[in-house]
Amino acid sequence: MVTEREIARLREVIFRSKRAVFFGGAGVSTESGIPDFRSEDGLYRQTYRYPPETMLSNEFFWSHTEEFYRFYRDKMLVTDAQPNAAHKKLAQWEREGHIAAVVTQNIDGLHQKAGSGQVFELHGSIWRNFCTRCGRAYPTQDILGGEGVPRCGCGGIVKPDVVLYGEPLDERVMQDAIEAIERADNLIIGGTSLNVYPAAGLIDFFRGENIIVINKGAPARTMQGVTFLDGRIGEIFAAV
Image 1 (spheres, one colour):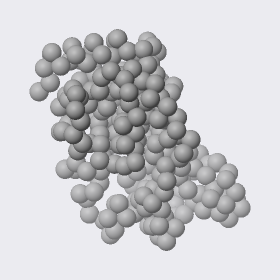
Image 2 (cartoon, one colour; image 1 turned 90 degrees about the horizontal axis):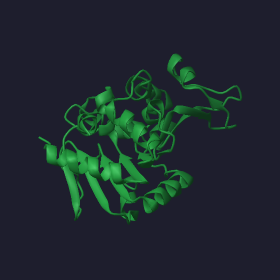
Image 3 (spheres, one colour; image 1 turned 90 degrees about the vertical axis):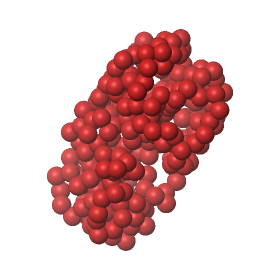
Image 4 (cartoon, one colour; image 1 turned 30 degrees about the vertical axis):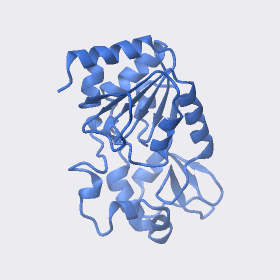
């Protein structure tokens, strides 16, 4: 149970911030109905012909493309989810001049849907797709409404612009996220257990005043001088 004193501390840090950065993971979107991976009801605990971590690998995409798309359309391509209180508060705080950027491991686009303008998507987005042969862009509705393996007019396979296991993160996005964290006066971390690398390693670039971690359950990393709030991020942000 998060106390009023903890909420007051979070409120003070945010409202004093001029260029805070929010670093978020899957727990930010679970309150919008998007399943995470490692919780009790997460995708990794569900039964498929192949483990989800295997099906979301670059190797599997190329070797079992049709099977990949069956899983991707069924479990990953969530297009009707709506921003929750966490997404909306972050957009509000950006408009008010407290939050400079959002760095997210999520691929759902809900931060932008809520109104956040400066969003660095470390793992890509379901809302972008491209031909692996000619590079032509395709809307997500083409993927969602189709069957089998989507193909471009040139014959190339269309791939979601999401980072699969075995693929490197986009260097430009990584550098932009690092620079935002380096410039941040405060760092708010939410909805992540901080055990997915290299994304989780970005917080090591922070040189500002305060780190506040908000998560349901303690993070995997032990960090000194950190304020930890144990709870659902949407509920906590709504109380600020």
